[in-house]
Amino acid sequence: MKKYCCEMHVDHALDVVVAETKEYPLLEKLEEEAKLSTKCDYCENEAKYIVSRK
Image (tube, rainbow, N blue to C red; front, side, top):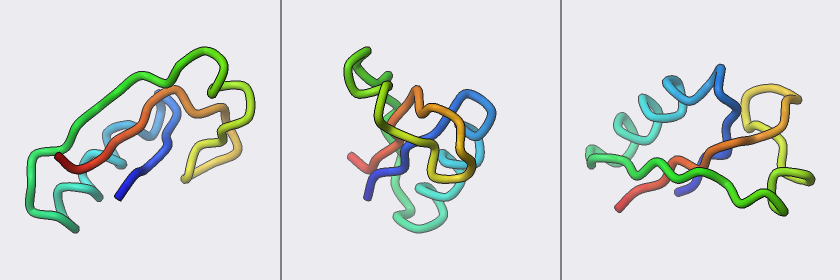
């Protein structure tokens, strides 16, 4: 499971991953090249983070 999110939705993405997996999530910053084409899963803003399971 991976959630791409902007700074505004990072808390929500962390909550969703914890609720669905019952595990501690990983938070990683996107590489500069990937930021250009990746949108937030919750809005149309540029994604800055990936929240995933361990």
